[in-house]
Image (cartoon, rainbow, N blue to C red; front, top):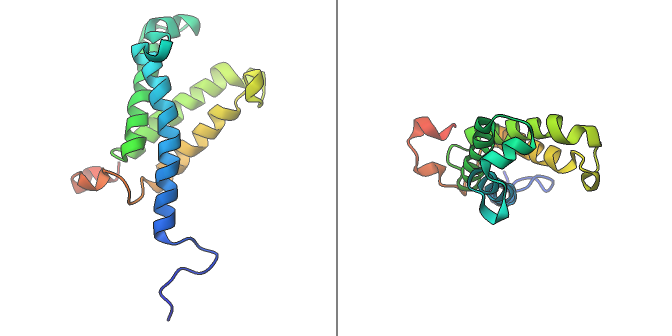
Amino acid sequence: MNSQAPMNMPAPAQINSALLIIRIASALAFLYHGSSILFGAFGGPGPQQFAATHNMPVTVGYLVGLAQFAGGLAVLTGILIRLGAACIALVMLGAIFTVHFPHGFDVSNGGMEYALTQLLLAIALLLTGPGAYSLASRLPAALRRW
């Protein structure tokens, strides 16, 4: 019996490598945007200006920034990835329905294309977990499922 994966199925190492690449791509965007909102980094608005721009309470500005930054960190490291991916998914749902949806799909017109892509990536990571190439294996077993 052949122990290799069938030709049409990627090997586990390929799947784990793909998950790592997806995690890095998604996490970098959320670390950037989250630090922009939460800390005003990279010329970002900070939580007060973010909230004011979107006619929301300042608390929402802090929560959105924290969800993006901490979610990005969780996705990047794989530690508590499901919790981080859930935070990102919630923020992307909020972004889609409060900002992007009225502008349609095309991101160049302010549409939901990019936010929807990030939402779907977060859902995929929520379903799969981080893969083998993460720091999650260093956590106690009870925390690894998160």
